[in-house]
Amino acid sequence: MPQKCEICGKHPSFGNQVTTRGKAKYLGGVGTKVTGISPRKFRPNLQRVRITDENGTSRRARVCTQCIRAGRITKRIKNRPFQLPAEAQALLAARAKIGKGGKKK
Image (cartoon, rainbow, N blue to C red):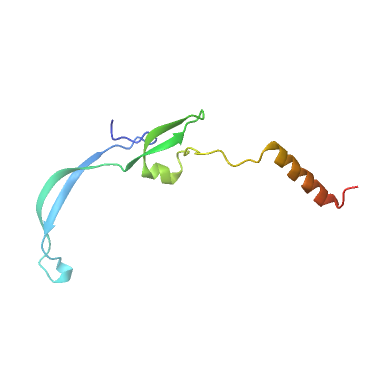
């Protein structure tokens, strides 16, 4: 499985790990010196999340945290919102109608 964000396409990039030693000049030292340079990878922070596609299906995707924070994905809704049964909704509607117009004749 590639280390790649399915939304923005972010993938690992390469750089150097620079090792230094010594005391900084502003702290009274003679300055820091580079003692080693070795290659390293900058990997994206990928998370496996359940998302809802454009056509409404749920699936798992590997998405970087910046896409999640920016709102580029729609997270899957775990449960349907609570809904009253039809009889209870009719009863509430009747009560609301009585309350608005005063007493029922």
